Amino acid sequence: MTRAEAKERNRRALLDAAFQVVARDGHRAKLEEIAERAGLTTGAVYSLFGSKNGLVVALVADRLGPHYDEIEQVVPAGLDLLAAVDAFARHYRRGCDDPDALPRLSLQITLLDMALHDPELGARLAASVRSQESALVARFTGRSHDGGVVTPHQAGRLVTALRALFVGLGQGVPLGLAPGADEQFFADAARALASGMSLVDQDRGAGHPS
Image 1 (cartoon, helix red, strand yellow):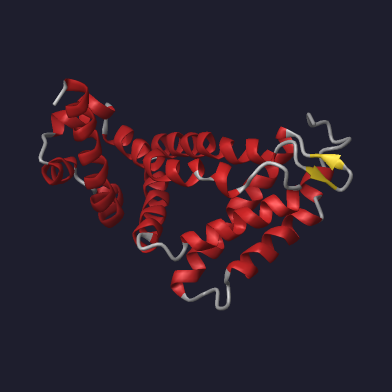
Image 2: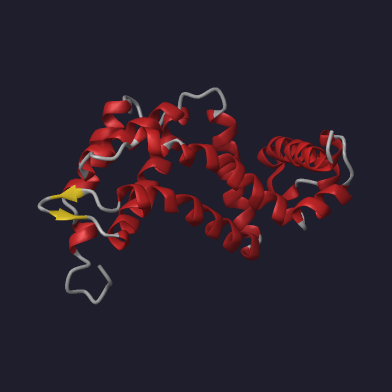
């Protein structure tokens, strides 16, 4: 095994261990337990990630990355905005039925708790999420809608609103708070959010770049 391969193996082991421990313990997660589960020392955490917060930020990127990497296939070019939003909504809903949906929800709630306890970590997590979401913003930018074309700024506003909608619904499904929230429900809710385009139209004449 090369040095680079060993480094990647250790990185993977620490991320997998961190997922289990952080999802369970949140801000009380101990680096010692994470390292022990990975078969490594805490020194490996600092060497690879710089700090506990660095490991947590890397964990978020690791878990979100595959989700956003699929967007290009899920939301193909050529669709207008509402069709693209529909396709993304259905993709998000299918993810609620994945085998790791509950651990992922646990991690999501735990990360919010951690961010509230550590503002520096919260800022880094927010920056990481925004970076990942840039792929979705780019995917919606340039779509036709209501006789116009969606700009990057407008797409960013829409993505913010869709995140709020899907996070709420995504928590409600496993908790039994969103009965009947199937793919069609997610798609209908997302299309209704985008169809009025108040998020887009407000930009015009409001001093925002378009």
